[in-house]
Length: 319
Image (cartoon, rainbow, N blue to C red):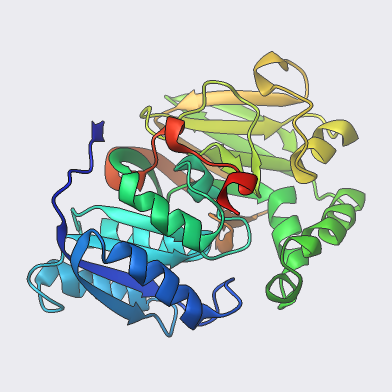
């Protein structure tokens, strides 16, 4: 569903941010973003999120109107993990107001889905021409995910990057992590239940995707949509180096639509996943849960400002 962003302004927007976002000078960055947002928000509150869970608490206050009684849009300046916290806050509080996402992390995967520029200043300017579109959300046990859920190699890769390296080296830290991950993959047994049918096997990676971008690169599947009411589960049935290199090194040399070997694609509205041994789970870039999982799609759960495709600009055009 698409709603055109009318020329009328929002009454009161709240902009959440972390001091330790991926933006080098967060306060100058906030100034750039605020100058854009105030052109279509009559009133803009800028709210620091100091600790994990703060945004969820603020969402509850906004729902109860104890934060303010006129908030009609929420903005987030941050990466995928920060966006995930906002989505959880909105879903838990059943907060039915639109959101705008401004990139402030390493990969900002869902920002690509919204056709927004990776630079926060350009993206915030683009929001002036954005429209509201509805997106599905995945319910994962008692949590929510906007973009993906993964286990196996994708978790190994994320953990190899952590311990502070990502903040210092950004995307460069993923190069060494990829090599380390591919040299030592962990195998695990899985059992997936889809519509009372069971799928069993052994794999090194399993991903359930809603959005088409993971780890900075696009999933090469032509018909994957974040608002079609379905979950896309990918089971990597072959440990082929070429396939894994394409995924982790962000190449576009393959199209998963045409692959019958190496990757199994399962389409569903609700699935359960059990593994042996128990596996850690990456949700939207944060290693946060462990198997078993029950995942279901919540259709048209959230409205997000999205730039129409014909208004996208390239890096060169934005300079």
